[in-house]
Image 1 (cartoon, rainbow, N blue to C red):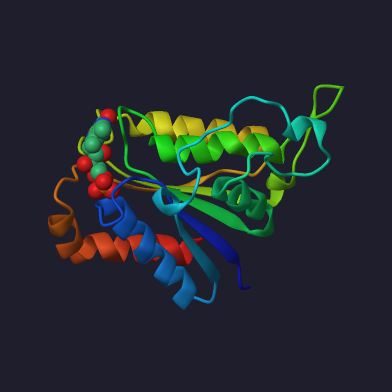
Image 2 (image 1 turned 90 degrees about the horizontal axis):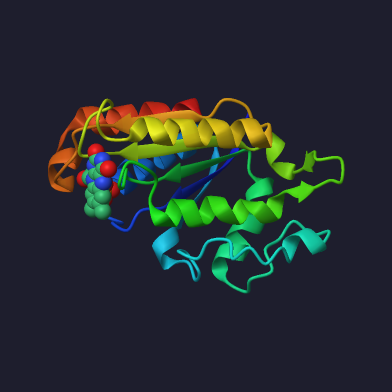
Length: 192
Ligand SMILES: Cc1cc2nc3c(=O)[nH]c(=O)nc-3n(C[C@H](O)[C@H](O)[C@H](O)COP(=O)(O)O)c2cc1C
């Protein structure tokens, strides 16, 4: 069945390893029949502005951030996808500030009920994360990203997130020249 997939490139280097892996995965998903949208967060207005904790969204019935910028538009569109794929390098043992800003704005896609439960349209949206790091799986901090995304998915009720990870990455030219990296990304894209 054809799926609607949103790829969000959420690192500062649009020609870096992570963006290359994300675009390769996205193209493979498209070739396999999915409807694919790619957004480059550094080009989105408000792309590094996270939640300002105004609670405006919690006083409204709409699943939309009250800030007037491109990030609000983007986040409001997330529930229409079958899956959202966030691509971010590992920065200081965690996700990039762009990826964090994007995720924090998901607050507007959650309504807190009086009984403590939440209502959200995100329960049917799968989460996936593409990441690359200079270190390896043991010392890069990527496990913190696995933990963050698993906790996030459990909270939203969206099932087990999917991950594509490359360790020991440096020069993007070297990364792109290795056909095994593109093949791994393409296989991931087809699996979404
Ligand atoms: C600000 C900054 C912080 C980084 N922090 C880490 C880190 O904590 N762990 C790690 O393994 N690599 C770290 N790196 C290396 C990057 O994760 C790695 O080079 C990655 O492949 C860059 O992705 P890109 O080519 O898409 O920009 C860091 C790089 C930068 C610029």
